[in-house]
Image 1 (tube, one colour):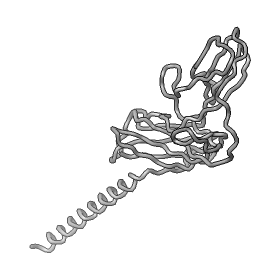
Image 2 (tube, rainbow, N blue to C red):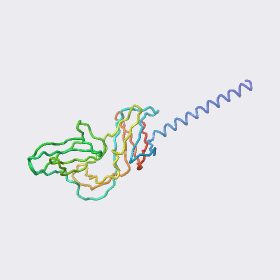
Image 3 (tube, rainbow, N blue to C red):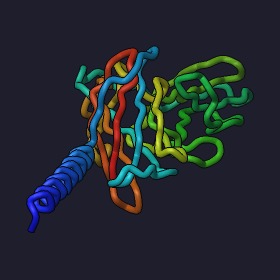
Image 4 (cartoon, helix red, strand yellow):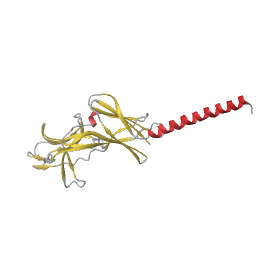
Length: 233
């Protein structure tokens, strides 16, 4: 073998080795990115989450439901708000409505005239179209005629709050991130025991589901910032 030919082969083998090393590094970085990550991105008013859902090689996955779960801290054991309304005049129309944090009407639960006495209507956490409402704070309002007589709040957590678009991205903004809200009355799983009143803290879990496979990330939120998160399948 000629010396020039020998050195040429060594250079070729060295170049090939560098390429393989670079590919290995890229694959390693790709594996590391498989871990959900969150970071501060840009300023807003209030709280926000900006996220992406992709497959293992970075292709966006569209129409993925994103559920939002709140975290809480204990505050006190004061009696929770009553969810039973009192009707005194059978000749006046009463209404029970559900509003979101932006004071938009989401559901008319009851409208009509009823006999005097207690009135309680169970809300199934769906809007006027029968669609489950997203995670958030809702007010159930009792009116007699045009006068608001009583109301109580309902905290919905763990509901689908966003879906990814064609680019695999989603956003959850301040309306669905009621950080600091109090009181949130919590009960045992069978709802027989009152556990106390809690406050929503700036830690949430976002959960994506693709073909029965779930990926989630626990996020620490910062006020007046959008927090970025990526979920990979």
